[in-house]
Length: 490
Ligand code: FRU
Image (tube, rainbow, N blue to C red; front, side):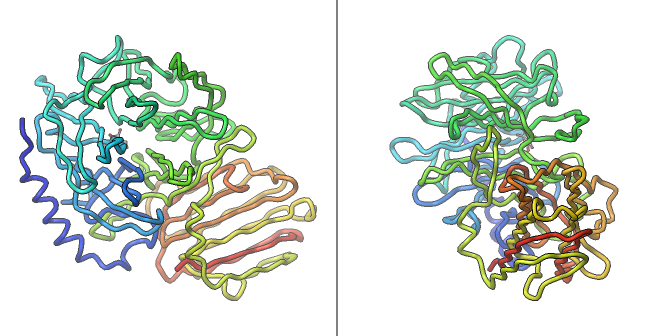
């Protein structure tokens, strides 16, 4: 069936009118928010014709999830985003119940392909999820007349189109490839690999990995790429169980499976598994390559388990994390803020101190900053506890507390101002590296992202803190030798 343009035009007119009326100061400065209404997963994150494109799961008309559209924004520095007209609305038979998550890839002849999940009625009171294609110039997209391009007949035995979604497409060696998740007849998340000469005619190649009753059940939003000497499969599992070592928390998680890939045989061998982020608000990450070869990642800065508890203070709701560069160190996936952030550094303060007790420093305050503390643990044998508090006023603060006895770090937003009965704490391992513990905090309004030990572990969390809570303070029980570098971000 041909697309009816009406739904898309309606969404575009609505966002132009309502979205443009939202003052810029109501939004974070460098975390992408929807033009208006609701946002979830990043979609179609790519570099195309001189700019980064970010699409997203979008319902413009309300601040709750609704029939999924694709919102769209572009950026040249991965930090400052400009809204573009809505890219897709659920306006064909193949996606009448929603344009769910997917990805984008440029074609060799300069077009942009979007591969996404179309949700449709199954005629029995439920829905089916199948993969659809749209093609365009980076602004306007035409859905393929043959949608769905990956239909039920291409499902391997045991897989089901009840949960069959979130294709990640890439073009390599003259062939289009995509990975798609499904939940199989044993309730296991499975990642399927497909190949195509033209992104229209697909064949099922293999199952790359199965959750084997570990790391949750359905695995959403897969991504699959080489990084340094490893191959990575990123997934966002539902229904995770927590582990006693505190590495994995219960509920919605994000997991990196690291291993090797034999391209000829399309065989992925999993070697190790780690959470991608340890915070309360991080889900459905997606990556792309920058023109200079960096693998960068953005995730939805929220969590399905608690999103309904979140305050809706604005005409927009939800945001993305900042973009992060990925790299492998000592066999682990590590992350750091994209280096483009350095162009935003202002009013830098640098201090070297020995701290015993509590302090704050002139010029180190605010809600838009990039703060690094290097605690020389080897030179601080007396330091039992070290605490960083931020977004602080006389009633509110969020803290990061390190204990030397346990080499553990507790992120705690219990006193941030939230009135919601949701998890406010995360506890992670944090052993000094070569004697030094490094904490880097990037703060943008209510968005807090903590990078521990140069990105060995990260914690993403949303605060709910009045804007006047601008304080930063440090506390040490026992003398701590430390170095602090703080940049305001403007
Ligand atoms: C993940 C997800 C995807 C789905 C989309 C729907 O957050 O559940 O699996 O495509 O959101 O909005």
